Length: 355
Image (tube, rainbow, N blue to C red; front, side):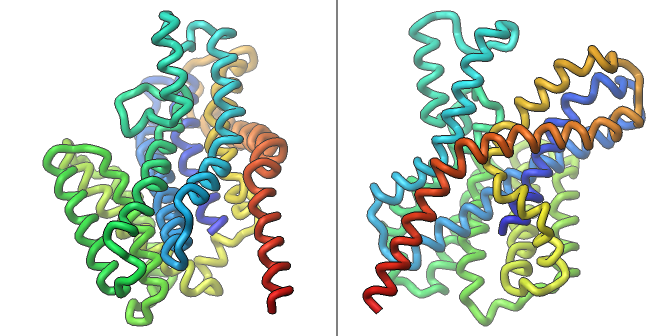
């Protein structure tokens, strides 16, 4: 799980790196097709995050009833400490660098814009996000709000796994069909891929995909994002391919953790990155922008080509790691993760005493 998160955040890093490095490789460089492809493929990292969230949250809710307010309080505690820190930095920098300021000049509009961003509305709503990657958090919050209500309305805990699988499969098909016709937030369907993954994990009749098949599914899913399919129908088709590809990948990794592919995703540095992936996700874009803001003092922009593109990638990635690790250690771990671990330890002690 941590390794898959690490892989997802690596994909997202590529999106912002190739966007910012473009002035240093030149408009007429032969690298531009590669840059465009890496940018497009990198966006799939967010979809993998959605699948993992769908799997984890649904799994925790289906196994036992939970108080809705306590559930949402835990979700807020998980998301907001690191987000508030980064949000505050963005607000401060908006005044330090007026040319980058997204806050409206009108006081009332500025307050509304800040409130909208603080409440994680950009993404599902047509609002420009102050933190560019924060659009995905509106999808996450919508899922957190919707899935407990869906489970309550349709009494999913009392249904069979086959019934639930058919229900969510039909819901995914309806979402994809609707998005193909009229557009909309089709990437919400990736949460359902995680839900179906959770159901498949407990169903012995679902075969285990081997590592070769899972690796092939991953490659085909990522390459499918490059298909020249315009319009809502084309995008819905590409998302549906990713839907299946990430399902197969995760099922192979979770069902047979001793296989060569799960072991590859269990590589310690990748797991370490995945463990702090939320802090990294929030802060890496700002770190890269700051680094490329200073870079002209060292390497002027121009037709430098391939040596700059590949040469800058390791040090830029290293800078994002340092900044993200600082946010993780100072904010995310003590305020979002430590309370949950402490609660888990208390429950474990109580369980031992009762036993």
